[in-house]
Length: 110
Image (cartoon, rainbow, N blue to C red; front, side, top):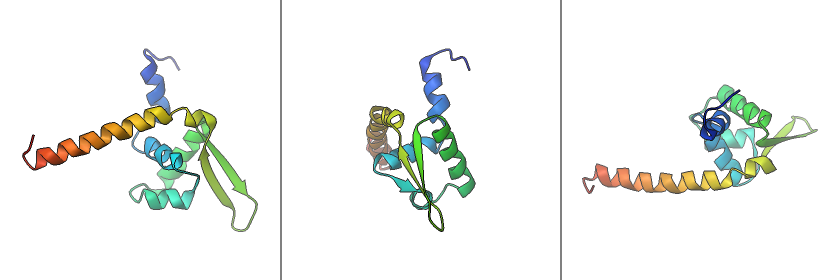
């Protein structure tokens, strides 16, 4: 796929509503699918599975399968996924400011 500017390549990999949220949760530690679902109750199981598969295919996640009954699958950030940490941190910082700003606007302070 050809991109006109580099940000298009970034958005191609992490764009959409859920991928960045998944990456932020995994930034705090390895998670099982059920843990991610619990942390994101609005996401459907089908969408969560699809997003995890895409992130894994793009090399941002590692999936470890434990041979037990029932099977246990744990997701973690790959080294390539960790390279997004500065971007994720910046997005979180901006989001905190935006939440404050919208709260103030709702109270008529802005």
